[in-house]
Length: 528
Image (cartoon, rainbow, N blue to C red; front, top):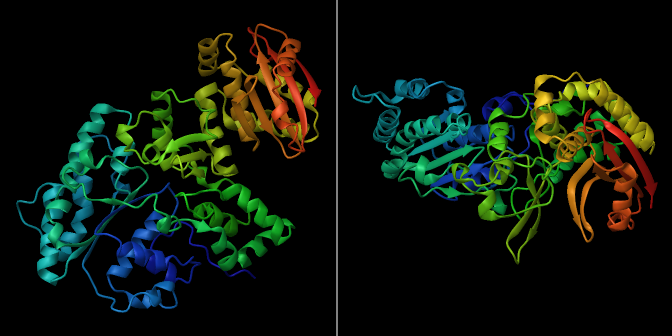
């Protein structure tokens, strides 16, 4: 009987250790972080173990040596000095309707700490409260104070799209964080973590000495589970999951790698798995898309619309370290936010040009991203697409039967009731091929196929290329010309030539969409 305990939803280090839950040992990197700089900032996507990291730091600086017995940090730490720790989780301060509510929540977060160190009557703002607490903790213990703030950016993420609310919220948070600089002599270590990097000048005011370690190789694996850790510390879990599927351990490892691996957080980063999804798969004996249980964050969709982001351009994006680490409110493109939230990750690095190549990390993100954006960009609901024709469409493609696949798509799109959102999308694109590129890109991505649109080649730009396990499909789509004309364009411009040495079957498909009904009207295909 499997008695292994998985810490799903448990973010407290002491509870994991005392409860004998599975813990992937990161304490050597935690120790390095605690001694790297005085003021430290780390950005990682949601559900990547940031809260567990802050809790581990808290236990370390409180000198709770007994919790770390048998862990890597025991080879590094000998003194175990105890410090007063102010640990705040600002996730409770998000989704608020006003700055008055924000100030109230911040005061409530500080209230338990005032029970330890007291409060002065004139401390009536969050900033004055935290300044007083730092000073009194230092005076009462004789030790410098450790400040740990988890999800520091939570109050601001929901209002990124609303300039007035963002400015008002920023002023409140600026007053809250300002004492971290003025109280510097009382502080031993200050650590802030969150999803996004918000400008130090605007958010932290004079606190401009934060050391951003988000892209440093030595901290790349501090959150998440590396491939080495998976196979060294969780091999039993791979075996148990493989047994439940009737797979070999090697087959299960390949499935887990494709679904949850692929993150890199520096130019010299090991392969990193999403820890929440990986452990959830082990706990539930089911490889599913756990990272998207709560859907694509609303603030991200709003920002995509605000920046008019081309949702099909998520693979092979070139970026500098500054552009992917750029402060969120100084963005001129969606790239920094997509990287910082985990929808893009580093896939390659050109040291000579200092250029990063960014792409979608893995299957889980590709499917979830498409499911979240399908209704926004096409008016179609992801669940309806999956229930309506996805399985039939997928099976047809797997068999290499493009005719059957297109007939399934034709029947499905023709059967869709034209809800208002869908009508609006159709009216916006009129006879342009762009709507079909968006729709097919998202549908193929939901089916776990690697797809790219407007692919550059020597002959021009290919409308869409879809990579299947045994076949590569090259699509050209028309609305005013015939499917035959579309196929002739593929041949005349040599669109399929770059894929002929791949080893997979290459299928060229010309499609004509009806400008009135917006469904595929005719299609022709050829191979080679």
